[in-house]
Image 1 (cartoon, rainbow, N blue to C red):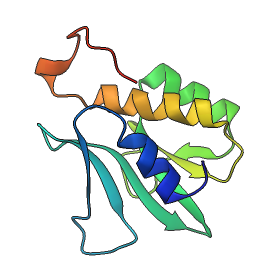
Image 2 (image 1 turned 90 degrees about the vertical axis):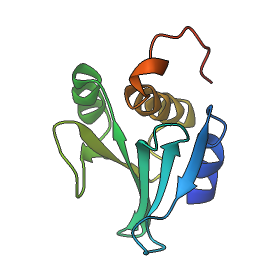
Image 3 (image 1 turned 135 degrees about the horizontal axis):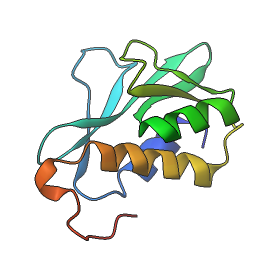
Amino acid sequence: MTTREEFVSFALTLENVYTDRPFHDDNWVLLRHTVSKKTFAFTFMRQGYLWVNLKFPPDWREFFRLVYPSCLPAYHMNKEHWSSVILDGSIPDEELMRMTRMSYDMTLPPEKMGDGKKRT
């Protein structure tokens, strides 16, 4: 995945998700949970690439940042909790999907966490 269309198309396969453009700037497209409106992915173009800000558990955040040079402390967000992932083709699609699912799960409303529902 290297384009916003590919990323958004995948993210929309997750349960109860929609896109939003709250900043009145077409460069920023967010993916949110329908029920809580919490954002799990911020997409934006920067330096010729699509960047996606995702939230990971601390141990995974450190792992991803060590393993993938295109995973950095988040641009314009809390760098402790969020990471920017540059979609330059260096991260396999399966891994990017796993990262996105992690962010999705980390931002689920509390009443949905641990509900036993399968997430894609």
